[in-house]
Image (cartoon, rainbow, N blue to C red):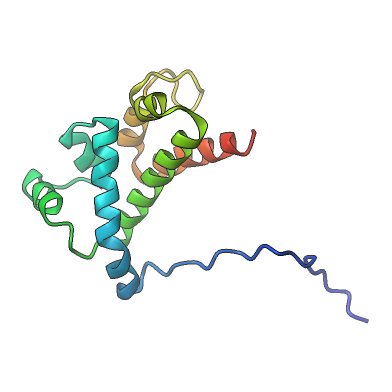
Amino acid sequence: MNLAYAYPKSRFEPAVLIDLNARAERERLSKSALKGFFALMAAWKLRDEDARELLGGMSSSTFYEWKKNPDRILEVDRITRISYLLGIYKALHILYGDKLADEWVTLPNTNPIFAGRTPLSQMLAGGLLSMQTVRKLLDARRGGL
């Protein structure tokens, strides 16, 4: 008698995880990730200094080169950062109208996570982990929590 627990059959399959350590995957994703990032920065009307910091910090010359020519292979950290930011962008546009969705990151927020600061300042101060927290908050709101 098999006493192992099993999940019931479902029509939903878990998403296949992408191995960002594989160069081929990063090569496949990098150009579109950077294009999406620069479009997101324009929609949010962020300063280039803030955009550079959200990418993990870089010189302005490198940033402008990337902006001019996004055809490159990004490191795992930068793809992960961009992924969180694009997820935040998507969640905001699901939750709010376009105007508020694009302004939300620069508006003061009373949620205890932000303590009156803007989500942008929180992400700039806390880096990748803060981006993850903001993404989780918005995904929870999308789920009705």
